[in-house]
Amino acid sequence: MTRKLFLFDLDDTLLDFKASEQLSFTRTLQALGMDGDLAQLFLGYQAINLALWRAFETGAVSKDVLKVERFRKTFAENGLALDPEAASRLYLESLSDTVVLIDGALQLCATLAGMGEVGIITNGVEAIQNQRIAKSGLREHISFVATSEACGYAKPDVRFFEYAARMARPFAKEDAIIIGDRLDADILGANRYGIDSCWFNPERLANTSTAIPTYEVNNLPDILRSLA
Image (tube, rainbow, N blue to C red; front, top):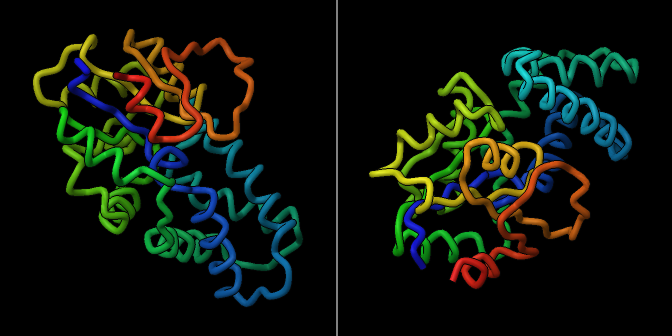
């Protein structure tokens, strides 16, 4: 393998964000006095949250606005007299503690770190992402963490990938690869930046986008075989 730099998305590539998100949302609402089945409320929150993250990635909203607005909208649409500022704080605190690794993530990062350099590229909240990485056990295998919060630009903006490349050791596009689960952020960003990519697609979704991955895998261990 000639690759020397492996740039991984974090959420739903190395860490199971969906599992962490649902657990943190439930804990937050319970702390605010809600009880009973929160499943439908969570589905509504997810849709609102996703729309706000897409808006953030296009520069339409700031991350500070996003963190509170997703709860404000959820509560307003469901007639809940709850404090969105408190919900945001509780949720982020819980998210740092509810870390679930994707199967094979730890071993894959350990192996690739022995071959080159592993970096994280994420649009998530910087302080929370660093805490989650530390709690996951991945930290010792990771050389650097590039966040959109520190950069000022989010994936798939080319300026974010330029920022991440400056954090790496001697960098050459032909020696690097971006690995992520999102076509519209990770793979499209790789296409725009002119770097190879690997689409992590565990649900075997059809690619109906304009983003074109160099490789596609359904589980993390297959990445080593694809890059061999």
